[in-house]
Image 1 (cartoon, rainbow, N blue to C red):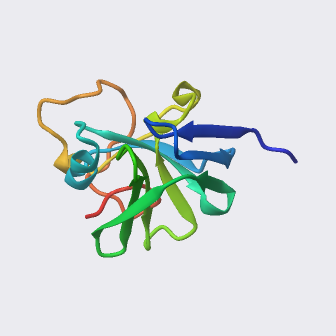
Image 2 (cartoon, one colour):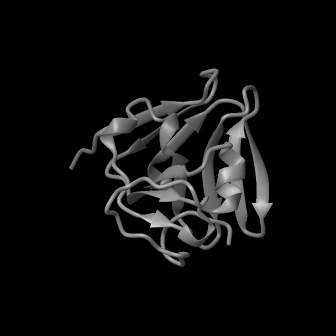
Length: 139
């Protein structure tokens, strides 16, 4: 069975990545750590099987909390991925770094207890106060 491939890159284009579809999930994360990492009111991730994820280019890593590694472009600083011990075998990619982010739609929200009060996506997706399942967040 062949899978289609999704591609992406950082702002300067020196880090490029791809993953074989299908993704595991796609969702919004409202946790403070993800917001600070992106500088945005919400982060949108797509979870992929780490064995189907490939990346080239100058990447640096930051341990944002115990058991959590965030990767970013060493040249332009674009946040790229989130990896956590509690999600073995998964790589969480920032959706906005994909070449065709419109191909993937978020399916849920996590860490809603930490969301910025005035922000609302006005959708009908499931909302979770926190998560212990396959999604992002440092808490």
